[in-house]
Each structure stands twice: as C-alpha cells, then as structure tokens.
Image (cartoon, rainbow, N blue to C red; front, side):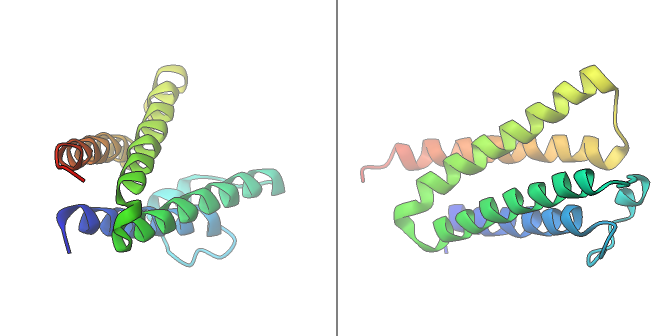
Length: 132
C-alpha cells in the first residue's frame, strides 16, 4: 500500500468516526466524545442538521476508501479530500471571526484540517509530476 492510499484510509476512518459521533449525539451516543456533551441539541431540526453532516462525512470517507483501493480514483479522492478539508477549515475560520473562538477540540480540528489539506496537496503534486 502506498502512502497516498494509507493517508486516504486513515483520514477516512477519522472523519467517519467523527461523523458518526456528530450524527448520533445525543440521541444514541454510540461513540462517546466528551467535548460534544457541551452541545445542546434540543430540536428535531438541529438533530437533522447533525445527521446530514454525518451523512456527508460518511459519504466522503467512503469515497476516500474507494480511492485508496482503486488507483483510477486516487487522484479524485485526494482532490475531494483537499476540497473537503479546505471547506470545513474555511467554515471554522469564518465562525471564529464571526462567533468567537470555540473550545479547544474545535480549534485543534482546524489545525488538523489545514495539515491534512496540505498533505493532500503535496500528494497531488507528487502524483501530478509522474507520467501516467
């Protein structure tokens, strides 16, 4: 297994796990994540938003695993990972400026999202420099 595939799989596992935690909290709480205990989901609409986020996270993670296994999708999976991380991180930055600084885990997520986007870009440049 090459580095790109390993990166895609490990990122998919992390994103899928977080997505499940978002989508099942607090109704089922299959994956107890302490920092989510401070989030009060008190309406069906808010639960629906978190479930939709879970679906997006699981769909993206699934595509990244497909890209790790099937080499014809690796570049596409890396691009989607980079766009996903930039989008999520960009949203967090907007929130930091408009809403204030969130709790520590969410600021750490921003750092991870930036780092993972940069790693994805490095892999894309590396793959792009090779003849197909």
